[in-house]
Structure formats: C-alpha cells, structure tokens
Figure (cartoon, rainbow, N blue to C red):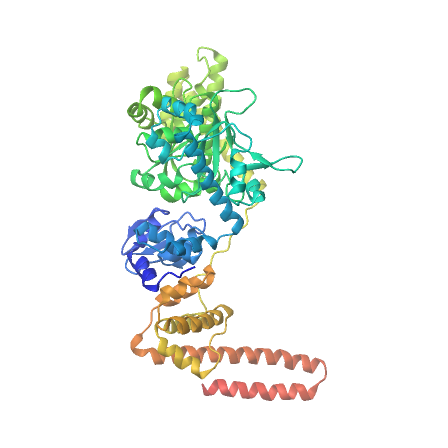
Length: 603
C-alpha cells in the first residue's frame, strides 16, 4: 500500500477549518477569540470544550482532550490515522491515491471490514434487482404509488430481495465472503443441519440502515402484501456493526440540516423520515426501536437543544410520545410535541395532505409538554361524567405537579377549570398536594436509588515537576537542534513514564522527519492520553529568546526531583537496615544520603 505524501497531509490539515469540522458534531458558540461547546468525549452540562480558530486546535478543560482536525476525526470516529486523513480529503475534494484508501480500510478489523463490504454489496444487488429486473417491477410500482421516484430510490439505495432462499447467500459465497462472518453480519442464516446457508431477507423491499458516517450496517425489509405469517417489517439483528439503540436513522444526512434549522424532528419509523426527507424536510431522524437511548440523545444534544417529537396519531403513538418526552426532558432539551389527527402516521399525513400542510398544521403548531399532557389525559374521557372529570384532573396533576413555572401553572389551572367547570381555587389546592407528593417522592428516590459512580475528571492543578516536564517537552517539540544537543548528553531527562515514552518516540520522529512539526508528531500517536500531553506541551507559553535558561531551569528541577526520590528511597532502606541490626549497611546508606544532600545544595 502506498503512503500518503507528507505535503498532502499538511494540505489537508491546513485547509480543514476545525471550527466547521467540530461544528458538525458539537454546537459551538463564540466567546471572545475561541468557540465553546459541550465536550463530545465526556458527559458534561456546562461547556468546557474550546476550539481555537487561530491555532486550529481544540482542548477540553474538563477531561483534557486536545488535538487538531485530524486527531479529532481519529478520536470522535475511532479511526486510524490514515482513514481519518482519507475522510478529510474526501470532505475537501482533495484527491488521494486509491491504493491508500484501500489500505486505510484494511486497518479495520478484518471481520468487520467484510461485514461493511458485504452490506454495501448486498445493497447494490438489491437496488439492481429493483430497478433493472422483471422480478422487481411489482415492488417498483408499489414504491411509485407511495410517492417514490427513481431518483429517490437511487438516493436512498432502496432495493428488492428476491423471494428465493439462496439468491444473496450463494452470490456472497461466490464473491469470496466468509460465510461465518455473513451469519454474524445478519445477512444469512445457517441451516439447522449445518449443510449451508439461506437468505435472511426474501420477498421484501429493502431499506438500508446507515451509521453516523453514512455506511450501510443493516437493513429493514418490508413485505409487499400483508400476511399473518410474516411481520410487516423485518430488521437486521444486532451485530458487531449494528446496534439499534445507538443508531438514529438518517442522522448522517440530518446532522447539518438540524444545525442550520436549529431543531431536529424525531419520528417513530424510518418511513416517516423518508417521506419527510424526500419532500424537503431534511432535519428528521427516526429511532429503530421502542425508546430513545442515552447514546441517541447525546448525539442529538451535540447538534441542537431543540427537539420536536412526532409520533403516530394512534394510542401507541401517544404512548411513545409521552415516553420519549420524559427521556428528552431528563436530558435538558427544549421540547415540543407534534400531534397527528385521526390516528394517522406522518407518512400517511404527508401522502394525503401534502408536505406544506404537514409543516404548517403539524410541525409549526406543536404542543408544549404541559399542553400535550393535558391532551394525553383528556383522550377517551367524557368530561360530562364525574368519574372521568376526577380521573382527568388526577392524571394531569400526577404528571405536572411540582414541575411547572408560575405562568405555566396559572395557564394549566385555568385550562383545567374551563375543561371541567371546577374552580381554579379548588384546583390550586389539588396542585399544591400533588407538588408536595412529587417533592417527597423525589427526596425518597434520592435516598433509595443507588448512587451512580463518579467519573473522575482530569485534575486541573499540576505539580511543579509536571510543569517542568511539560515546558521542557514544549521546547523539544519546537526545536530540533535543542533535541539533538540534549540527546547527545545521554542523560535521563523526564521522571514520569508518559514523558519518557514521548521522549523516545520524539527521537524516532526526528530521525524520520528531520524537522519539528508537533501537529504531525501528535498524529503519529495512537494513545489519546499521550496525544493530549503533546498538544498541551506544544502550546504552553515559552520564551524563545531565553530558551537556554528555561531549559536549564527545567532540567535542574528534574535532576533535583530524581535526587530527592533517591534520598527518600535510601532513607527507607536505612531504616530497614537498622531494624535488621545491619549497622554497616545503615552507616553506608547514611554516608550516601549525606553526599546526595550535598549535591542538592550545590545545584
């Protein structure tokens, strides 16, 4: 495999705007010279993640994560260096040798690589069958009736799986794919007698499922005709490359649009997202299960704080909206809930009424959580019946007690009074009881619930020794001649293992590259912790006009530290010798300690 030229790496690094790049993952706000947002590498509620447009570097004051554009991609996507460079090159339309691109993919786990390639191969096969064969005509006509154009089908790589037991499995085998990996990937199933494999998806319209980077990791297959024997939709099982609790359908497309619009719309099903997206509403995602996971909510929080839930209009959809809303509010989002009439789902509504009506009457007229809960509780109740009135009031109070601001509380009580003909005063007393109950429950939960483990954050204070090591490393990163001079002395410099490791690696870097380049050196380091040390040292304040004095101060401090460590060790050995009545050893150690202390005084 060919190597990416250094000048190409430099071009990619310098042409990538780190603010734009990180802004695709984190909501950034400018404060002074720098941009700030919530760190994508650890959970936090107050932004401590800083991006410098001037230096083209990022740094988190909470967890210590640091780096440049290339190392950010390496860290956020867990990609090796070559693959991160290829990804940024594609983003900038900078051509890179195809053999390099192939080589970067080979750095992945081989089994996972086969799974990704097999899914891409299967998607192309299914798409070809839908668009270019007689067998796919019926499915194609169905999609046309649902409003899909040929352009839509190609954009979303929709396909057709033949009603054949071995159409894909035999093709995968002929292409040289490891069939055990294909079983793990969820594309085929091994026969019970172990004699072969058969296709998981048969006689279904195939919709690819994409990860955050737009790579196909699974499928959802829909039957053409309803059947009591078969489920309407069949999804890929969870595999090493597909976890439904982590995947948000259309996230890779919606991310930038959600940032531009300022909000994201969450649907229950991916068909709703396809319907909205192909009609120009491009800031939508869909869950792949029955709930919203913490992982999915964290992804959404990074791109916007405003979220609109839009589930189906049937009872199951109302329940899903309520369940989603509770999870969303726990994460501190600004929440609205769009409600559909007549038990319709978003796809049906758009097909029947058009996208403009969907935007104007549904998306632009959402409920607050308070008004949604009131509508939720009012469903299926006859408010001319006393029992239904009491139940309605009880359910609203149970959900909203203690959670409303004064204005919201006033609005809620007035609306309840209008709905039920119960006086505002009586309702206010009921609300006070509900609030007290909610407070007591919260206090009880705080005592009974197990405490979550505290994730230790990086300490913000450094010892004098660590500061000396950081400053010394900073000088060595910027001055190759200084590094050569110090290396010729052949003396110990650093005292901590991480700095010693970096010193050895820096020697290898200078031997290979010849000139200082802390960006390139950081990119050669896989360990995120070591990379953080390099970037912090590279930007530490130095005085280039007094390099010799600063370096001398650092090396002297580190020498003193090592001597003090030796003195401490020998004092322990001396005490042990005295306990063993080994007077000669104790006397010899005492002499050594005296000499070491004299050498300290002379420094």
